[in-house]
Image (cartoon, rainbow, N blue to C red; front, side):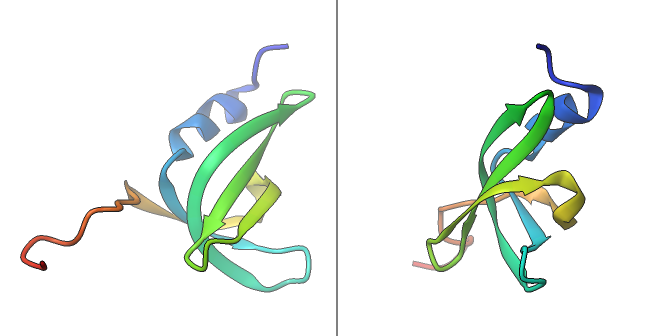
Length: 79
């Protein structure tokens, strides 16, 4: 089955930094490392700054999306 419109848009989140609400109600920040589809619904995998993975995160749990992709390179001017 092809992804829904929201599912197609979710693909643009790969590599982006997002803030999500966890099942326990806590807030986590991390980058979207993978997206899978369950009956056409996108489920994200988020890698947190601590290196942990949050799996099966629904789009409705995402509260903030950074406009730029996450980067693993140092900021300009730092060595």
